[in-house]
Length: 482
Image (cartoon, rainbow, N blue to C red):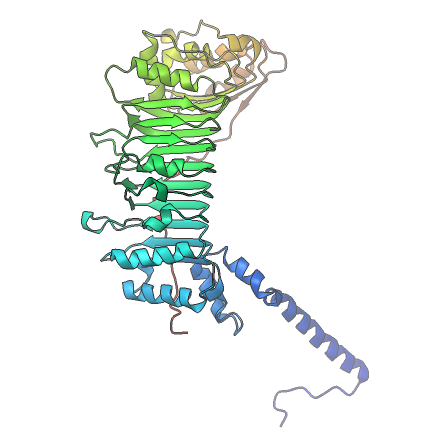
């Protein structure tokens, strides 16, 4: 019986039509499965760019794909997604034993166990290091004194390591000759403890080609002094996760990095912050205060050290510190500064023209005000040098809740009437009720344009912290019985 099948067409024309339809279907099938036609080496390279959970999921596609993931030079684990430690160990062992010659170029482990076994942990990390790891990430959620996750000595001298990211681990004090990371270019350390004040300095100094360093401090990290001495470092980020209610300061800092092009200090409060050397015309983001009573000398040295930068972003609380300092001491000239982004609070409002006077060659200015005083309290008579020669772009932001219309007008007027080469004045929606009047202000600069910025979305960035990565939902399917 033919059942539901169509009879073979008698007409040769119809026959040719049916064969053509079949050819089209085969062509579409071939196109949809084109990736399976790639060589295994290329497929493994593709799978190494995704997480292990995604790599494993391809095993159900066909017989060819069934074991392909076991030969991918990348391993991405999350302990919390396994039934228990034994399940994870079985998976790990199955992976590394399936190909003893496999290089593990990329390794990531979100480590969270009920009971930490140091020897077993070290043996697995040693194995990863011996397989020529280049990108190593370990994020530990084990957080007890009795079960500190300590890094094995093999990691201190990994000759292939290029990128290192660590959270919640401990570095012991090794012999100096054991510390050598000749290929390391990026290092990201958060909530990392060091059993010795000079370990961090030795670790950084051992990286002869280090390009980017990120350190996020937590209370109780025992970092000692954050001493950054590197002839190659170009980018440095330092961020504190210290809570405001914690009565403690962040570790002292000392920086000597002549090639440093970008430095970001966020939410930091320490007794000492010394900068010996950074690249001229560097880009710097500063949110820092000194936790000492008599800090004039410290502030003077700090301001002098950053006075050569080309681009500066400075927080309201740092400006408050500088304001207090400026009442008795002079602020140095920022002669190289071409772009300034500053936030002024109520207490530091009165110093903003004076601070601009320290920036004679300013080209672009972004000002944010937490507060605008009443018109009679404004003192905007001083005209900085940059208004006469270099300032071309100004952006003003005030809280939408500010209702002081005369103050908004006076602030806009201050720039429009005094800046000789101003090309564009940009204001946020807070100036909406005075925008028509602002556009009618007589301008000193021919062709100056006044525009309103579109409402900006609130910045919800988590900064440099690894916490969002640690608690991101992940899933690794069960594959051991396949």
